[in-house]
Image 1 (tube, rainbow, N blue to C red):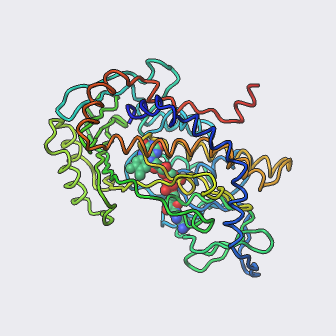
Image 2 (tube, rainbow, N blue to C red):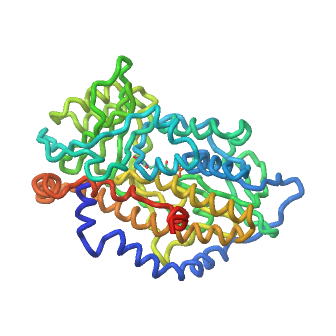
Image 3 (spheres, rainbow, N blue to C red):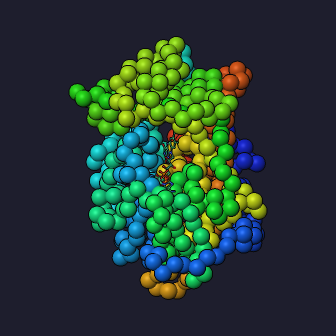
Length: 448
Ligand SMILES: Cc1cc2nc3c(=O)[nH]c(=O)nc-3n(C[C@H](O)[C@H](O)[C@H](O)COP(=O)(O)OP(=O)(O)OC[C@H]3O[C@@H](n4cnc5c(N)ncnc54)[C@H](O)[C@@H]3O)c2cc1C
């Protein structure tokens, strides 16, 4: 991952700042395009028995729960609609970088989570025959860096525990969304319930029905599939708190200690199509093992064997590039997209959830300002959120995709250059951690 990031940083035409500048130049054109999309959305009358809600958040994932907790800081209550019967507690883990922790600190849950997960000291990168290509500490060049693997279940439970018991409505799948004549948004749930919401914060994930309604195209398959799991060592896991990464041709894998008893692992392979959805743990385990069976990295096979069924997952990777002039803005009136619902990105830079958390902070601060001080309207607050966040998420989405394409290369020459020059000689701690040095605009303004 980082080594390709390094190449991209050195490739002038593809640098993050160039993309940002391009996006900035185009920003003024976007509302017009969005208006075209939204003009096709009809308005309907609210019915007398529609339930009235002030702020509805769709989706109790990372972005939805973080947004609800963040709004609570400003004394603003919201209702979270979640399609599942309970919090999504299955699945594995994610790495959270300094920017993710900064967002979790802002909403008051950083330290509680820190106490449960190990801080990672550095990374060791190997070739598939076992040779060490490079290793360094994440804080070698910048002491402020922070990286931990967090169990998704624990993250969601921690966020949900900060909300009142009735804040999340489970088994509430949004099935239809319409604009009401009074400017409210009408939400129809699968069970027939209808809500009339003044503000809708759509955190409904990569297949967001709200994004579809707003005119966004469906996310695109990136050509790679990730198998993940969480190895469990009841007597304590034996590893140093480091990222252990192995690069092969068209295949990479890694493992990272998450806590004293759990070790997160992943295998990424190429596939021309996403294939059928597989949830049977015995098939997932067998397919993941098959991919790394011939590697001398025996730890991987052991970890996969020690993985409980409910943490085994297989995810085809998708993203959506928010091209200026083509992509609609993330808000329409008082409905706004947050996290994967707006900008699904491949996990090659470990930034999807971190950016979803950043979104939540920026959006809720602007919304609170609009609702509490009335200096700006909600619509203006959402537009300001769209401008600020687009500059951040668009370049990252593109870069994550390109990093993945190059890291999964099956070309012998590219793999050789990677293993003999780029990783050992060019890869530095800052090339891996630079994107985590995000500062909220509000914080920047407060400094001046
Ligand atoms: C393989 C893989 C590895 C990753 N690794 C990392 C990593 O290391 N670091 C990182 O920062 N990010 C990582 N990510 C990205 C991260 O998982 C996502 O960016 C993050 O989960 C986005 O959060 P979200 O709340 O926007 O969406 P989600 O977490 O998908 O939550 C969406 C919620 O909305 C609900 N919902 C959907 N539709 C409806 C509906 N119609 N009605 C009601 N509810 C609905 C869903 O049930 C779900 O609870 C990874 C992703 C993948 C696939």
